[in-house]
Image 1 (cartoon, rainbow, N blue to C red):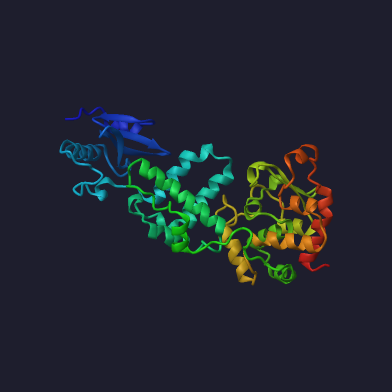
Image 2: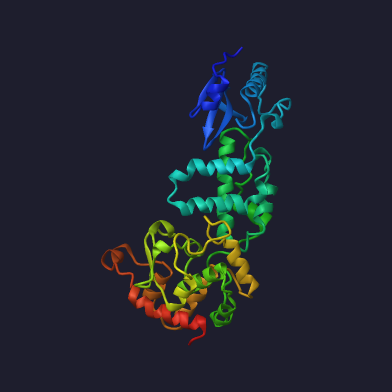
Length: 377
């Protein structure tokens, strides 16, 4: 019989890992604690989750551990034995497990933007998985949550799939579910289940001739102002959504996006036209475009829905292509147009000696673009 070492008081006060003897451990994960049974089988160390402390008492955890020991002594694999039911092990729901994953890994990520991106993927886009136990998720469930965004929001869908896969990888490592990971399937299988995604080079975008009429329909709402700003400034969607008043200098009319918010880790300066300043709205603090949850920005879905609602073609990201096509047809050189999109196609040697971001030269181009969008020219 296992020798019990823990008391209810010790469990209640526990901050780090605690062993009860005989392989039963209480392990912290984020701000939650879980019962884990650790054992050796065929020379391999294995861990079986017995449920979170909030759901499983010390006495119940000991009972579960005893059941596992009996199976092991009988030469059986507790992960495969039908008598030890999954429901008895209180496998965590995907939503709870995903939240814990974010808490455990957030400190290693580049900034708050990354954390919010993970939260958006796992709380919003993978919402249909959140109430499923991690061991019951199948490929059909993954396909079901991805279908609505697979073609409309290519990068969002890819990131959601990658992040769901990462959470399920951990669940497999912790032996809360068997492998293989249902979120990790090859390109051929993805195409068969979800269809072919458009690549960055062939995504539909709005012809620039249609832009002034589209721009005039954008409502004066928080979402509308965000859509106006990213259209006027040539931003990536996340750059505009996460705009912060600390980045805006209304005196010099320059918006400086820090490196940790950019796709490429380098600072990006944008000359603000009068129309862009109007799109920013009343000066304040924190996020410029706050969503319904005050600590979160306006949603990516919300921007796309607005674009479609007022008759826009393509995607929000496609507005960058619209701007770039306009610059080409109106004679603006690559040395101005590419920096406006935060692209840098210079060689390493060229970047070493030519360090200017041609901000003031870009200002004239961005003013001409703003005049075109607003119908002033």
